[in-house]
Image (cartoon, rainbow, N blue to C red; front, side, top):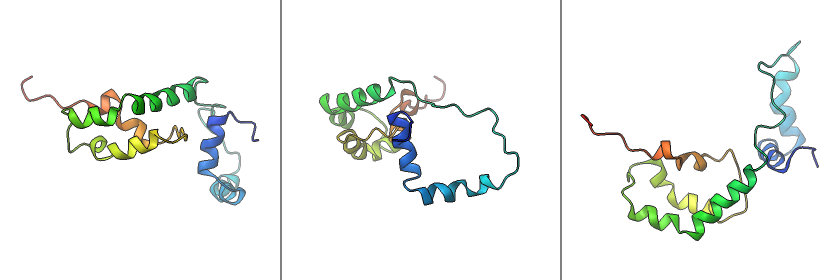
Length: 120
């Protein structure tokens, strides 16, 4: 147990799965005299209810068959989201939350907005 909240611990372990990988990543920083971070890093960047929200979103994706709905929708077929639709469905079927997963960002309202036609 690292002392980190579970979501942050899982993220840290995905970035630095072994002490050697962590040491290698930190080596350039260790050699810097009087290293300062500005602004100071936060202990945690995630709200405490984020894991529950992520689980609920993944469960809703599967329960409501969002993949099928999107396939019938007018979502742009050349969008990154469209090309990664099956990948998102597979991601929602597993227990890994992965807040750093790029798939979360592909399905935001702002990412799915279609550009307005000229003159509108």
